[in-house]
Image (cartoon, rainbow, N blue to C red):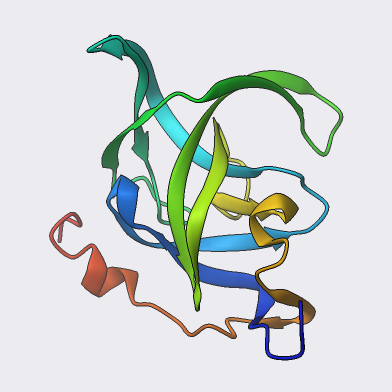
Length: 156
């Protein structure tokens, strides 16, 4: 890490191109080890001998009007404790994330986050060595218009 490392705020816009998600508002959470993504209708399967998970990503806050169906190899099942101390076994996938100039593969757990304000949480292992976090700032990487990006998914 050096002074030229990009800076991100406590909330940012990111993309998950490998999952077909062009924009999702994320909370940067250095207190969380692993990143977590709101996913529903999760189905585990075996395709050509490989464990896979298919799921719907609901990328818009406070809305279920857009669902992006995604599929990824299952890389692990981990016991994860949430901030309330509850432990659940979660499917873990690996996916590329773009967040400002950060663009690399990260591990992501799939979980139900409908009661949370942010549909994705980016944890410290995804951020380590890539960015500096300014906890007082927001959207240092810019803003995105979900209305434009998801216009074909939203009913009038």
